[in-house]
Length: 279
Image 1 (tube, rainbow, N blue to C red):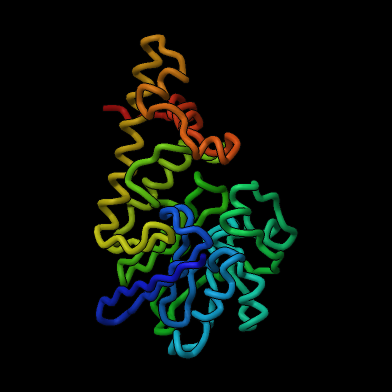
Image 2: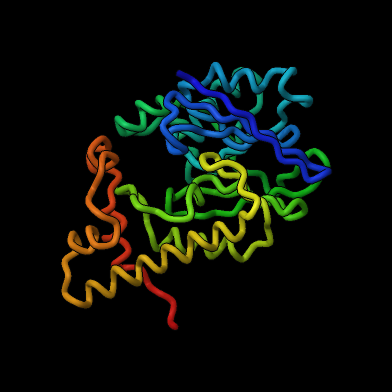
């Protein structure tokens, strides 16, 4: 059954509205929040939730027509309705250059992700323009943050101190990793974001995080701590699978139903090769 919850954050001048949708209400990783700030939308929600997402485009939900659609990366929960939104509104989505070929030509989606999100329709996009602004002229700055995905891009709004974080946050601690993720790049990208001056973080899975900077810092610090523990155990001669069990426990249903694509072992394997900062 589809779900819908609404979110609102208002700093007095710029209001962000969010709508959470999802086929399964089994936690934050099976639902998605589509955010809107004025006439600008961040990401599209999954294709199997188009009926819900379409309603958020109607005049009774939004006071201003959609002017621009910004896609953070190609994953199906973030881009799945881009083609339909373009058809419905005439707005050509902006996407990272690294994502545009996949969005136009399609790409393989693992079975578990197809079950949860559906499959995206191919869509022609435009690259991010040199300057992205809200309707009042305040800037929206794309920040390339690879690690979770090669094309992942966050959006920093310096005047509002907002960060639309794509999949860079989700939680303060990780217990699983996808086979195609890169932990070194992820930590480097967290450091890139922590060099910015923001307060409020808008995560499409976790929700609105008002202590957003600290939450993202906690995630970076927790990952570095995990890497340090894993590498210390490796220096003691302990094998990677035993390290995983000691630090994270045994694999669970997530690994089973994803057919090994998402696992604790992937996280530890990468943690063993991360370059740690000198003390």
